Structure formats: structure tokens, C-alpha cells
Length: 115
Image (cartoon, rainbow, N blue to C red; front, side):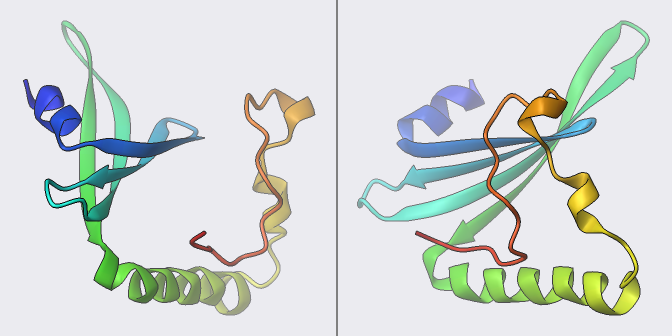
């Protein structure tokens, strides 16, 4: 039933990122007044006695916070890369098409951008 509510909100763009046992969904949705917001959902497959279920965590991000969010995320990731783990070659974690990736993923330039 909740899926129907989400569909009525006007999903206009969606991108999925598979990351091991987790999947991240980046969904742009429209409000009734034709404004837009982003939802970021982390989904993890969990097992229990009678099968499995998906545990989901969701963040709602509104346009007035886009730049602040991107700046903080870039600063945090760059801090890990340059201060905490300077010797790690992060390119080893990139998904390559020849390595079995199912999508053409652009090279990482350590900066997130909004088009």
C-alpha cells in the first residue's frame, strides 16, 4: 500500500547503486505543487527463519539542502581518503564492466555533482 502512495507522489527519476549486500536507491520525486525532493534509500537483504526480508533506511533531502549535503558528503569522503586512509587505493573498489558489472559507471573524481 505504501508503494502506491509513493507512486502518486510523482517519481520522475531513479538510479540504483548495487554495493555488495546493500542496494542504494536515489529517487527524485515531485510534490503536488511541482516541487522536487530526493530520497536516498539503503536496502539490505536480511534472513530470518521463514525466508528473507529487506531492511530499508530512507533519507529525504530537499532542494534547499542539496548543496550543504553534497559539500558535507564530499568533505567527509575526502577526509577519509586523505587523512584517515591515505595509503588506500580507492580505485580498486570501482566497478568495471569486464569484472561483471551490469552498468557503465563513470570514473570517480571524488566530487559529487548535481546536473
